Amino acid sequence: MEELKLGEFWQECLTKLTEILDENIVHKWIKPLKPLGFSEDDTVIKLEAPTELKKNWVQSYYANTIRDVILEILNINVRVEVVLAPKPQTSSETIPSADFNPNDPVVSAEKPIIDRSIATPTKESYRDKTFEENTFVMEFEPEKGESEAVESIEALPEPMGRYAYRGMAEIPRDMQQFYKATNLNQRLTFQNLVVGDSNELAYVTAQNVVRNIGKHGYNPLFIYGKTGLGKTHIMHAIGNELFTKHKMRNVLYIHAETYYTEITRRMIEGRWVEYRAQDNKYINSDLLLMDDVQLFARKERTQQEFFVLYEALVNNDKQVVISCDTFPDNLDAIEDRLKSRFQNGLIIEIEPPDVELRVSILKSKAKDFPDMEFTDEVALYIASNIKSNVRELEGALQKVMAYSQFKQIDKPTVDTCKAALRDVLRQRNGSLTVENIQKTVADYYKIRISDIYSKSRSANLVKARHVAMYLTKELTRNSLPEIGQSFGGRDHSTIHHAVEKIASRRREDRQLNHDIRVLEQILGS
Image (cartoon, rainbow, N blue to C red; front, side):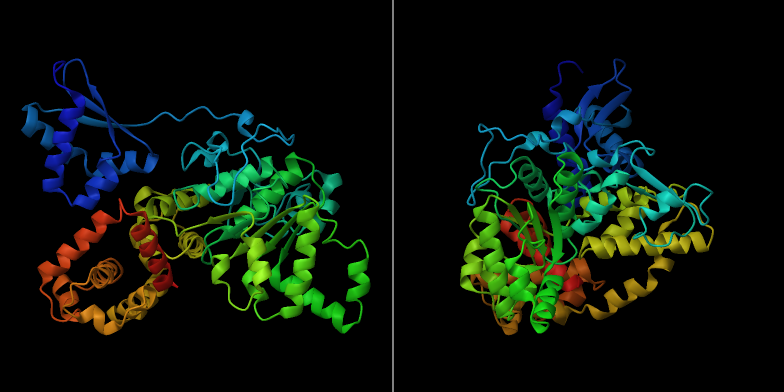
């Protein structure tokens, strides 16, 4: 066994496993494993998994298959043991300093230089603090002396049973009044943000903005993505980090609709010019967080006022962070000079989460229910059925937990999820049809629906057609023959080939993977 090259042996195992298992399963669950070697007596092989989810899932469902393949190749019967990869050491040294260093990298608007030293090394690293640290615990009836803790988080929903919210910003009592004026949400911090491929760049960039507040190349920070993906969480996290750890007091979070309403009200009262001439809360901000700026569309006076405010802040090295649901150039009914300013800084996109990140988010949020045992199987079931955005994912988890508490179930199962989410799943499965998918894909790729059915072999039409077939297989319960009938009477083998081709290509083609994620979110909403 010592003479055997472990890498070559494992590659042969993967080849055999691809013949036995679906290629997607091998790619998602088994390829990420790293073979550590055999025991001295060749009775155990250790495989290292990058995440807890992969470790538990492979050990439970694929260990015996891997064992059988090893038996076929080496003619020895081994026990497969999957272990978790050790996490790199993290410490408080990774928290960016408030002091500016002229040697720090400056991010350009075209291609940011990402300082990954301040990023979490894994998707789960910010979820591993001890339960007691920075955690608020609530019961139905607070004991005497606990009322202050409840008051400090009065915005939290009424708990059902025992509930604990982790990772909240710690605000000293003498700073409570200052903090209230910021409009920040105490619950949205970097500490409880779950990081994955779809939001890692936004997370690391936000940390760099904290480190280089107001500097050229970071100002403004423009974060865009569809609704419910975590843009607001990152904005509040920036504000909370600067307020709590860098003692910045002139922080202001404002929603675009609130800004518009305030301007309109003061104009009606005839007080806006006077207010603007004074030292108002906007112009005094060291950090302005403007959420959902697309709502300024067709509000000409609001756009004019925001332009004046933006220029005053940025020209004085005050940081501006903006969120939007689309890229600046795609904004409708917004002045060109504003769109131009938005593109002067750093533009970052947040994409819909993949299944692994959705599972990680669910497991992180499930820790807010310490009396519940939340399994990987349940997390994967919910994540596989709720794909559109994080907000809906958290809503589904809340429904499952509320249902479990009502039924006095302390360990929800897949059947529990099906019962708790039956209305949600019925609505999704009932409303999403092959015709919906075909129309959405045709609109997205700017082709006619008839092109989806046609026999044309034009490259762009074939790509759109295959994507539509792939999404139909992924998002509906239709069989391959049924899908074939919906695509111009094509044979089921043609549909299978298209699905497999797209599934394989999206792993290598970033643009295709982005297209599919966006389409999944559009269809999910």
